[in-house]
Length: 281
Image (cartoon, rainbow, N blue to C red; front, side, top):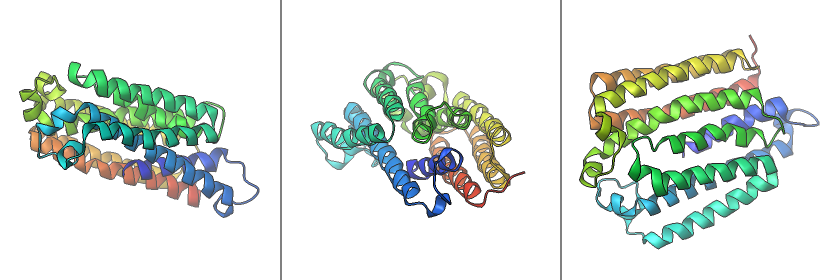
């Protein structure tokens, strides 16, 4: 569900800067139609990616029955997950193609990255999450290409924010699975480096989130609402990361992962509200 506010925030921001409307953006039907399609394409694509990941992780997830967020632990057949991935993923790609050929091409790259992550990287390298970081970082570009054919500075800056957030988010989350990963000889980062080292890595990249948030505010037309909300979200991340460093356990890693979800909501709502009130410094 975290993809919904994040996508909405990017789409509203992109529309407020590059949208071509006859009058006020908030009173234009085309704005809402495009926004709904962007959110649908994003949600369907991300959900398809989860289905693909659960397909390749099927045996791993069965070995970790406490993970009730995994399809294998709900009795779904493995082959059905490929069907679900196609049912969700194909419409997502078609929507992106309808909205923008450039957005469609970036979405294809994102799909290839997720396939590489699930099919090869995850069981073979402790840095497999980099294959997730790239498609996540590309998401702002996918969305902005719907509203402009240029590589917008706003999209690049938001990509940098995501590039810093996603590794820490994934590293904290994978700490939950150290026991099952060890049993299955999966070289996850917490097993290879140790949870204390992973906690410090999480803190390091989330410091960069704060820095890139300030840069995004400084180099765009975003105003005070975004700066306050974005920095509050960044400080929330840093507080969680510091607590993780102080208590580097699998349980704390999982808690840090869950608490970080708030960042998506606060950061994204800040983008939306700033575009709505248009407060400039």
